[in-house]
Length: 182
Image (cartoon, rainbow, N blue to C red; front, side):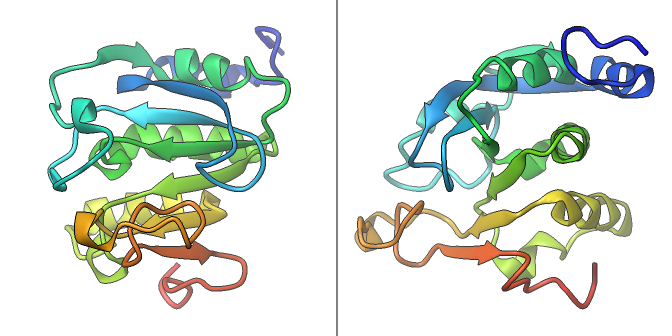
């Protein structure tokens, strides 16, 4: 088994190598983007363009840089302190295939998975059957999903891990709004 210094099978390496990500950047050892210490992966591209968004540079789908999911995986595992990974953006669900591959491999390696999305619960799976299938698989790997667009008039510091009070946190083991369809 080839490992690249990480506990990856040959199949996982190929899957990660063959998947591209349009990437905005990383934040290592964050304590504000999900529970515990984590690495945050910022996907490039967002169609929501929320007024007051603190990640405006992630909106343009053509900006950022194209990398392999293997490069992203290696960056995630740079931190020896992080026990989790947060996928944020931009909008991670605009790159469903890359999000799915990364969530699958990181979950298999024991990482806690948090995903931020501007979608509301009912919107996330209101897509074509093909997209719905991929999104359902992604949700099977997630531990925490934070939904909802940022609304500057509802900005809050009272609720953990969100920017505005309309955003919802779903710890999927406890409160899974998609449990009947996953």
